[in-house]
Length: 71
Image (cartoon, rainbow, N blue to C red; front, side):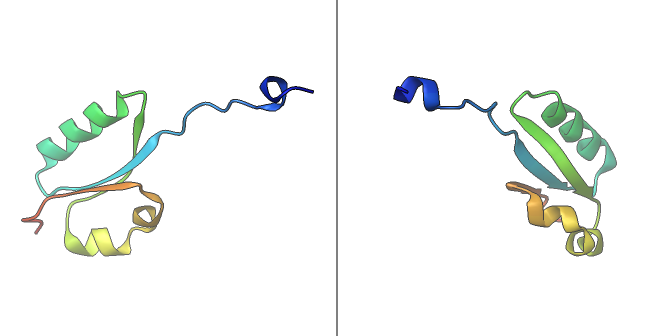
C-alpha cells in the first residue's frame, strides 16, 4: 500500500468562536457574520462578565471575541 492510499482526508475543522459583547445589535451582527462563514462557528455568547465566566462553551472555543468594556 502506498502512502497516497493510506492517508485519510478529513474535512477541515471549523474555528470555534465565543463572543462576549453587551450591545445586543453588535452581538447579533457578529453572530450572523461568523455563522455565515464556512470556516467559523459561534459556540456561545455572553452579554455580561457573569455570563462569560459561567458559560462552559468558553472552554471549547478556539477564539474569544471580547468587548473590553463588557458590563
